[in-house]
Amino acid sequence: MKLKNMLIAATLAASTTASFAVGSELTLNPVGPNLFGAVFTQTSTGFFTDTFEFAALPAASTVFVTLSSLFGPANFFVAEIATATSSETFSFFPEDGRLDLVSFQATVAAATPFQLTVLGAATALGADGFPVGPVIYSGAVIAAVPELETYALMLLGLLGVAATVSHQQRRAQAHDATAIA
Image (cartoon, rainbow, N blue to C red; front, side):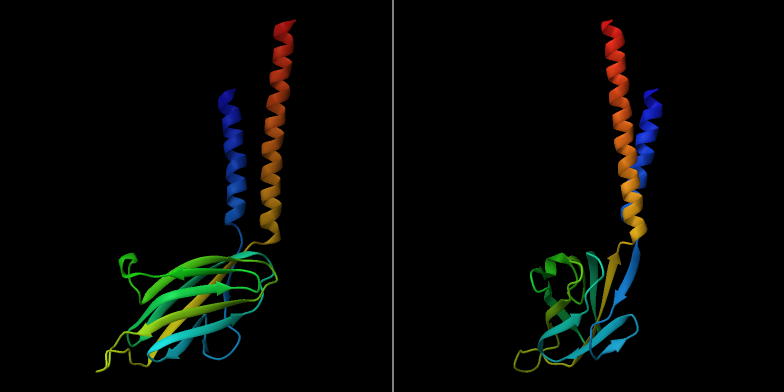
């Protein structure tokens, strides 16, 4: 009997967990120039700080960002995702891996436009020791936007778990009452 209850609980837990995985991926393009398909490109020279504006998302989402060097050596040092009320900063160091290809993720609230700011440098050095350019890099921002069905499935899974727990408690009370009598 315990095996049956464990199987029911495992099935309900799996449905709840699966509900978090269900959703659509939305590739975001910044508002403005330098767009190329599912990625945006930017040409910069020397040390650079570039800011990209993104429109608001319909629901709170996790955004996944990838930046990579396309032409000329470029290293990324810091990136920031900022909204009107919050920001998350990401720093990249040589010991963490390649600096010309970085990825990170941040949480963005619903109905909130956000900015991606990238600080980096062209890594080819001139005679004066300063970075020269130009370099071209690309970025992709993908948002995992949960769909209404995701929330419904999650709620259904949680209700199933609650019903199972309630059933087990009633059964245990009835067993205790018969044992006392």
